[in-house]
Length: 70
Image (cartoon, rainbow, N blue to C red):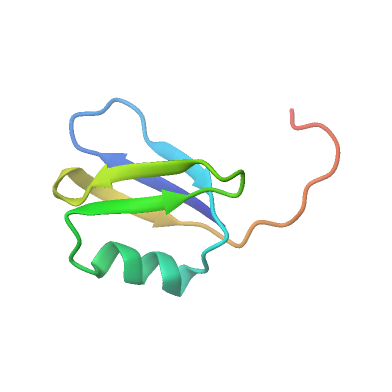
């Protein structure tokens, strides 16, 4: 699933694919933690201070892609 994360005072948003479903992402964001920890589909970990979140956009589930992206 693709997630777009807006961070206050940052010119660009973070975009990552995760194996979490929409309910998992929602639970993580609304869980009250000081730091949100996301792990993408390639095993990379992204830490975001929850106090600096501007928005979190939850996309549609990721489908296996084949070929080139243009």
